[in-house]
Image 1 (cartoon, protein in one colour):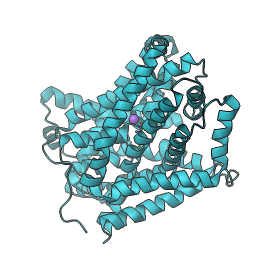
Image 2: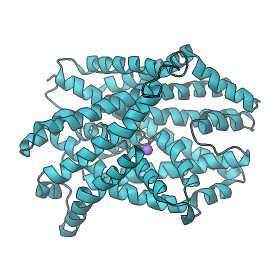
Image 3: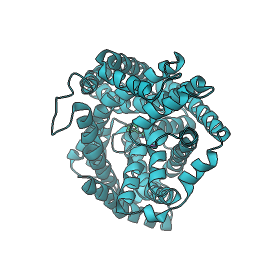
Image 4: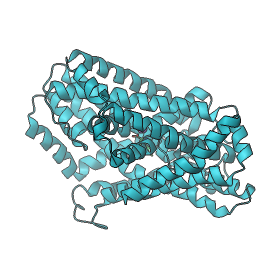
Length: 446
Ligand code: PFF
Ligand code: NA
C-alpha cells in the first residue's frame, strides 16, 4: 500500500461541493426538466421527491457509511467490513462492480464531455450564428461523423480529468470543485435571469409545475425511481470512494439531505433556464441529445446576445460534466493506488489511459465502427446499457442490502445518530422499501 496516511476532505463544505459536483450532470440539466414536462409536471416532481427520499437517500447514506468505515477503495472497504461482520469476503464483488461501472461509464461520458467542449468552442467562433435548422443539424451530424474531431474532444476532456484527479483529493478534487461549483451556480442563475426576460417564463413554470395526475402511471413512477438513482451517482463506487475520505464528525444523514436538496434544486432551475428559450423560439421539445446539441444552438444562433448565452450554457454543461467525470475516475484510481505499488500520479495515468482507450472504441461507434454491433447495440450504446441497466442497479441494491441486513444494526443506528423512531423508520426503509424500489426498476427495465 503506497499511502499510509489516507487523505481526508478538508471540510464538510468541500465534501458537499464534491458530492454535489458528482451528482449534478446531464441528468439534471437535460433529462430531469424534460421528464417533468412530459410526465405530469408537479405530480412528477412529487413522486420524484418521494423516490429520492425512500430510495436515493438511504442508498447514498449506505454508500458513504461503507466508505467511511472502510477508509479504503470500494472493493477493500466492502471486504473489510464484511469480514468484521462475520460475513463472506465475496461482498467485495459489490465494490468491484461499482469500480468497473465507473470505469465503463467514464469511457463514454468523456466522449459527451468532448461534445460539450466542442460546442463551447463553437459558441465562441460564432458557428451557430444565423444558421437554419439544417445548418445546425449538419454541425451535429458532422461532428459525429468525424473520428478526428471526436477524438480531439474526448482526449482534451480526459486530460483535464486526469490532471485534476492526479493531484489528489485535497489539491485536485477539492481545488476543482471549489471554483467550478460556484461558477456553475452563477451561470445557472444568469441563464434563468435571461429566461425571465423572454416573456415565456410563466409558460415554463406552468409546463414544469402544473400538477397533472392524469399523466402519472406505473411507468412514470419507475422513471422517477430510475432518475433518483442516476441523479445521485449511486451504484458506481463513487459515493463509497468519496465516503472513504470522510472523517467521523460528519453527520451522514444531514449531509445527504443537503446534497439531495442542491441536486434537486439544480434540476428544477435548469428547467427554468431551458424551457423559456424553447418556448420563446417555438422550438421542439424533443427528448434525446437533440434538445441540447441541436435545438438550443438553433435558438442561440438566431437571438440577440446568443453568442454569450450559448457560451455560458455550454460552459455550464462542460463544468457539470467535468465534476461528474472526476468522480468517476476517483474510485478506479483509489483502487489502483491501494492495490499496486504505483503512486497517486502513476495510478491516475494508468486508469486514465485505460479509460481513454476504451473511449476511443465508444466514439468510433458513431462513424467507422457504426456497423459493429454486440447484442444489436453499437459499442457506445452497449457501454451505456450494460452500466445503467445492469451494473448500477445491482451494485446499489447489494450496497443497501449489505448495510441494512449484514452490518450490525445498533452500530449503524448509532453512526446515523438515530433515536427510537428514527431507527424504526430507517430499518423499514433500508431493509424493505429501498431494495424493493430498486428491484422494481431493474425488473421492469429488462
Ligand atoms: N449524476 C449525474 C447526473 O445526474 O447527470 C450523472 C452521472 C454522473 C452518472 C456520474 C454517473 C456518474 F458516474
Ligand atoms: Na444529478
